[in-house]
Length: 303
Ligand SMILES: [Zn+2]
Ligand SMILES: [Zn+2]
Image (cartoon, rainbow, N blue to C red; front, side, top):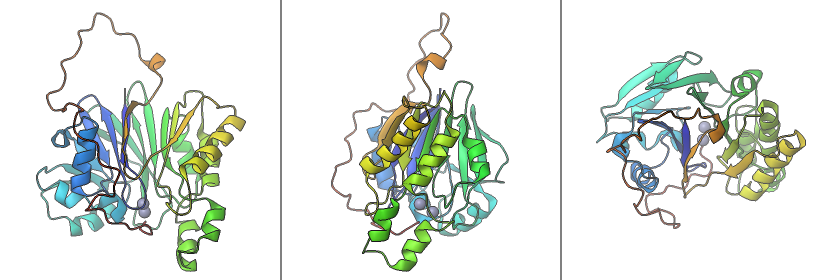
């Protein structure tokens, strides 16, 4: 069964963790290396046990931790050929670059990964669907508008992690951002509003959809309560009131959670309990503090 954790999400840094048995993949690494380590440890995952990093696109809030994190851990980094070409200019660590073409299937361990192009102001941004025999996870971050391809690829996933960046009224009324930045956020290559995300989620929902995690919330132009209520209301109107909807946070990770309902797992027959992996640490490491970390760079307008 696939599992999903969110290490952090927001314009100041994005990183998620997808696990399948001993295969552990970071989706984006936009937090500092120190925070990536602290947050992995707080979830009981040894930072040295990762299988690789896969990138949605090159923006700093998705990639800034790679160089330092990989100094001690020469991990493979998977990204589209164009994204690789841009990101590697700022990475001196001995990572193994694994370029792929958007749309071509990937496998990391037993994990199957599909990628698909999304509209965003980056060189070759993509979304992902992770699959195993029992479950699937869709990941969509930084998208200006929803395309037919996005809906086709995400339809039927068990768990969806998608951005819900801003509330349209709050963005319009925001006095901190110049008009040009507001335009950049809301245009067809910027980010999704709560209403756009609600339409997407209700369009791709199927009876097996268990959980929707919302991310990349603007700290000034959205709230977790508002985003959650807009998406949950739309799901209820569409007949999917039992789907859990929650928001990822900037500072506190969301723990590893199975991607599908347990009833989907076929019962084990006389199976010995597998030995606990020596590469996973006990989940006793200290939680990151709620204070803003000292190495945290606030870049609210970063994409
Ligand atoms: Zn971006
Ligand atoms: Zn971003």
